Length: 528
Image (tube, rainbow, N blue to C red; front, side):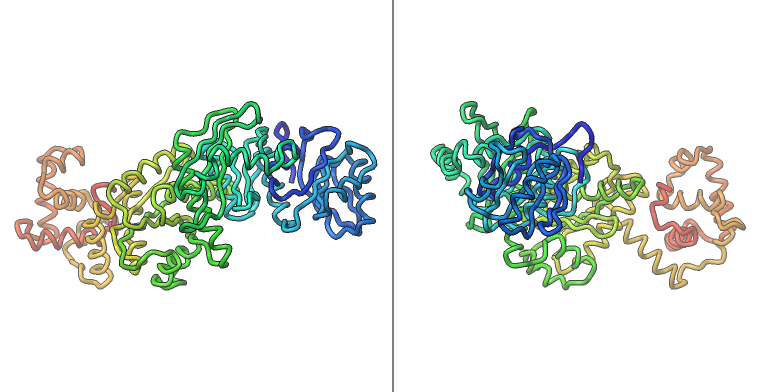
């Protein structure tokens, strides 16, 4: 993994990302501003060279192998080497010069190589604006939170170890770097935060804690929230302000992120599926709704709404398509969690679904406004359908309502459609479909209102529009851009040709349904 020209991570970025996982750091001669181009594995047996500017993860090395690896890395211009836990004296004895030409990082005993690789790669990708790797839900959440708020994000466990990280290029967390390097010992630093009441406030579920900047200690302003499963504190999310102020709604986004992180951390402890996977499996009928409700902790008796979201036109190119899906899903999930604690987002094919428990009219209006903002920010032409309220046991019915509302809205060039507003039209379409498929709407006279190519004649179009507009001849003339006398003439010829009595309510209903069926119109005839 390498960065693009002009934007590179530094050792400070990497050290900040690995905060809490390092037992010792020996700074190189070039300091923490040394650029980092990527991360690679170093096999102690083969002693593969570390490329210039790379961080090497030293695997399977015996004590006698370590010094030759360091010497080779120094000659090759490596940025840093990361060793398993070796004790402070052990890692400092690996170089003959002080300070060394390459940074030497020693891990704590509980840190895995997967964590180190993912955290380092995240720091490098953030600086180089690279496509993110598939490094887990917490990393995706951190990236989404960074994009939403504009600040560097770290997600920590209750022992202050970083679990996921996303940074603004060139704005390494000085507070974290200093504490790791021992310039302010971690315990001293924690004591300062404790004395200011920061950790006491972070132990309150739902609390947002603002930490003002401190020029003396060298840290920027930041905002934080605790991660909780019930009353149990699982960790903390920190957002550090950089050169620019944080976004206006950062506190709301942070609340949502803390809820999503809690689901991930709690789920990882019991090896449960993610909430998105549970909803996706239920939508695909791989899981019974009752079992899904239990995993989602939503009582089947509670009323829920389902929203169906897609784009009017797919972005071209596989990379762009994957990118927009990931960005939109992350932003939707963050918005949902900040507004509704139990909301869930799932992706099925090209459609995203948002489950909103006990949503009211205001929630749906907020959702519509949020999607409008996302459409503008992500430059996506989103189309949405929202179901009625039903229990989770009727999930397939909810999905049908949401999808059909979205499809009807798209045919009308409407971006946001509520099932409650289009229910009658959708039900009528279904009646037409069932009757047509069963051969119940065949009317020999109406065939005369269609041309040889199957298209409806002017007489047929005028008759159907008149029926849809409940006899408003003037409005029919306006829509067809003809004189009212022309409309009357067409109606008279159409009724005569089709052998129907337009004065009969039954004939009018039959003709209306039959014309819609024969013309294949299962969408709004007023908006062809």
